[in-house]
Image (cartoon, rainbow, N blue to C red; front, side, top):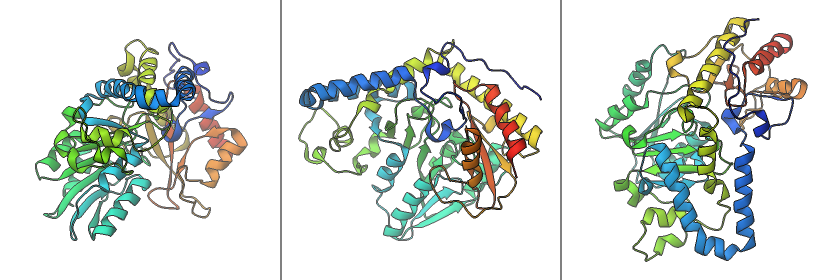
Length: 403
């Protein structure tokens, strides 16, 4: 069998990750593993909290929060005062959507590749306001980025108020031409909310240069921070209208040394902030795993997933969805239609064959019912703990078990 491009692990190794020995884990895109040194730091934060909770929450947390947020802002190419932590990207999308002042007849544009949870949030706010959700169909396979830009522009009307769009699509693993899309929307006076759940750590980001009005992402995916760490970027001039989902003490705070945006989002009630406080450790630990830091990691993971995609397609005869230029660290390939009943809608889809791959072979890879059952995709991911041999094993299992 063709071996593809062999990608040996750099300074770190599989031993640095708490993944169960012996399993083939190719689903970092859903819930990736967090490196052991980062988890150790998170536990230090938890221990510190529990040793003197009042000291931690009342006297220490704001400084720790600001330090962590400043480091993340630097990584994302933006300023501290335009960024806040949220538990995850879904939370960030909801915070923006539920803060919008919508009227009956307003149109909210989205694509048919949008993550289900965020599409549900869009439908919810539109339904309450009497607004209309307009869906742009982004056809696959896509030949070039401009094809999808054109599909979006065809759906714009004088009533279009906002575009909600994935930077990296969850079901199909395709990187959208976000700079061009945002430029087109800005020229038409349309606000843009980017669901960047997968983007940080997968592709280079400079939020200030990108120009989105709102951008939310996860730190627990490709940045490999602990679960419960996400962020929301809001342009400074728009912050007065964006409120957290939980209104808390910040709503009537009289402090003048801190923005209303940070006062409200910085404290929405008692919670464990250790995941967010661990983000700088995750950024720095990951960066030290390869000469060249994050740029090298992103390139390594992209090359690995492209090599694996080529092997899968060649060995099984299944179709790829997009050109190499539109792939990051995740790729989906078309599978034959399912003959089983439609799977339940869950974060991991629960396709019977996905369950079989795990139960019988200890291979974890998502089978995505897209665009709708019986159509489906298999989506692979690449992170530093993955090597070519993982995808060769997947192919061998698919050859012997697929039916």
